[in-house]
Image 1 (cartoon, rainbow, N blue to C red):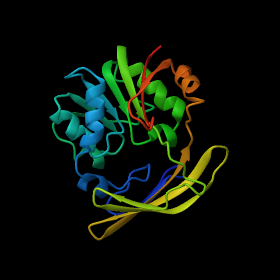
Image 2: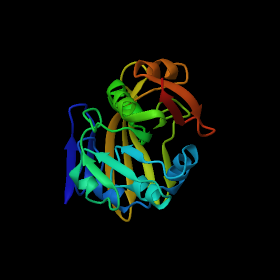
Image 3: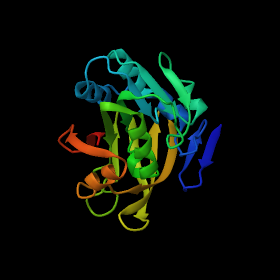
Length: 229
């Protein structure tokens, strides 16, 4: 059965199986292999065994890899269908912006470019209130352009073929994008709005939520480490 979904921010998705409120396809993410590269980057940034609060955990691609590296994980997502695929971790069904666990973690993880797609201030506020003193907040941001001659049109990785179906301006420093992705003979689409978060504005954006830039974790500066200010 093909699913469709749309939320109030205009994000939408289509394709086989359940579609979450942000347009993500549950069956697609559940079928993907663990994201060992991202988990290894997180593992290298924090002390061994550091508990991780994973915000927007989805079906657990990174969760599984973090568990294998010895990190206790609290996985948060607002989709029960996504969380049903996670084993071995504590799961919490909640939107990120409404999360109030009353706990602090040595590592708070916000990846999958959520800082580009969602309510940036509310997401970073949630990161800050759950970060332990001296802990790290790890963010993954988009660094490639969606518009212009250098923007990607099609690419493949991990057995998945991606294509940009639509990309057009959606206000200052924002693009409305629809991605198609195909694997195993099945195809999904995901529509979202991406808002630029550049190096020039990053310190002020972090500071507004009580965070300070600590360092970048990769050469592309896509992975940002911040600490409570």
